[in-house]
Length: 328
Ligand SMILES: *[C@@H]1O[C@H](CO)[C@@H](O)[C@H](O)[C@H]1NC(C)=O
Ligand SMILES: *[C@@H]1O[C@H](CO)[C@@H](O)[C@H](O)[C@H]1NC(C)=O
Image (cartoon, rainbow, N blue to C red; front, side, top):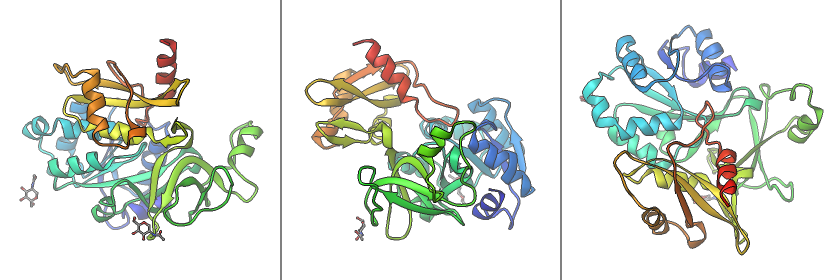
């Protein structure tokens, strides 16, 4: 894990100053801050809890060079760019590392537009793989929009058809399986869960729907279990989340499957409006309908004050599904 982090972020060439925005009990913080970066002798500035202004102040005060974060913080940096750049001197910052949940093309481009001198890097990993499974090492690699990057050293991967269990070729979407020295041995005292996640050859079923392109770049499409099934078509909610976030009146959003007798499920959006915005349900639906295939259209909208997320910024769709179904 330490070797992967040191080599991926080239910390053997130059030490850096990092701001720690993620909790250390989460694999992101554990792998990066509690072990890898510390082992490399870099400086870590720890925020006692995440607060946007405190983070920006810390970058300025300690001349931080690297800022690892999660997509919601990145989105906030883009949306508030003008005010942030007026108030803080962020010239020391040369890279942000984004992980924890997929980053859309729109958000990536928005960030590059607002912070042209900051390289955006992405990483992919999960608790069960204990380290970064894949990452981008340069802006050039990150501009393959939507990619999580190349596999980490010593990591093997294959894409498996979830129905047939067969390995799939380049460009085909299926479940990502990983194998390597950092993969977990199993879940603590839970043989059943371990057996359904790790096979006898040591392959870890990640539960993530991915494809790999001809050059070996991994693309995360969605969580396997999170796909919305509309009349048998598969709709990845993360794609609609990303589109919603490009609307100037929308601060945050999450799309979930809504049960329906005729079509099975259809996409429903929970939307956080920007302060002072009165955008309507139908305006939100029209905005998406203009940009996607008909089966991907959002067919129901609810406004909410915030989107529930875990500490790494991943949307807790299960909570929203429960909320939506409680109102049926
Ligand atoms: C980016 O860096 C260049 C060269 O150091 C500098 O001239 C320019 O002002 C910087 N741009 C921003 C937006 O900070
Ligand atoms: C994979 O997809 C890319 C982009 O659409 C295309 O250029 C390439 O030819 C495809 N390769 C294969 C083997 O299907």
